[in-house]
Image 1 (tube, rainbow, N blue to C red):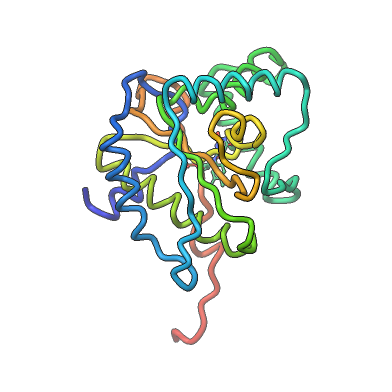
Image 2 (image 1 turned 30 degrees about the vertical axis):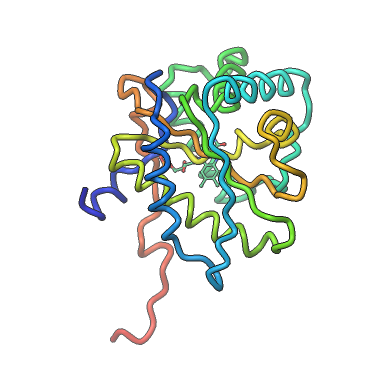
Length: 222
Ligand SMILES: Cc1cc2nc3c(=O)[nH]c(=O)nc-3n(C[C@H](O)[C@H](O)[C@H](O)COP(=O)(O)O)c2cc1C
């Protein structure tokens, strides 16, 4: 697949076919993703891939914890957005709810949608990325971000879709209980991965972007 085409084609997939993803395919994707750059070549990424019963246990644990009303407690704290960033978040939610036919006042359907995120959008596998707590978070976040995007792009080569997902790791105790990731590792992000169900309405989403001219300052070109 052409590189630019892959970058343009990649989108977050929130509906998957149940077909399993073979371990060898996942291994190849991770192998190529390890070519990602990192500061000082520190390669802070630590990878846990879950499928089958372990994934089911994590999904159930996430949803039960959510249903108890437990506040999310991610290893990497989250910040509430304001201003233009909040506006973009709201716009994304509006687009998704419209595609999914979920009305603004339909709290039940909204809660169901939220649960789906905590269930890795029913992907047949999920990749959980962690980093050792001995490395500063400001360093690992950048490197793991690059690593995540490389996984998502490489996945396209195998016909796979992905969704980078903070929702999946909002309850790190649940992940630790079923995957054995020790407390010395900062559980940073999850990536749902599987074969896209192109009939799933949310997969038709074309998320918006600011034009380059609105976000770029040019110097010394004239
Ligand atoms: C760090 C990060 C965390 C994300 N967490 C979630 C999430 O919890 N749930 C979700 O539905 N999408 C999540 N996304 C996907 C973003 O919503 C998505 O990348 C953005 O809306 C742009 O859409 P696109 O990926 O389809 O281009 C996350 C993306 C990133 C990079």
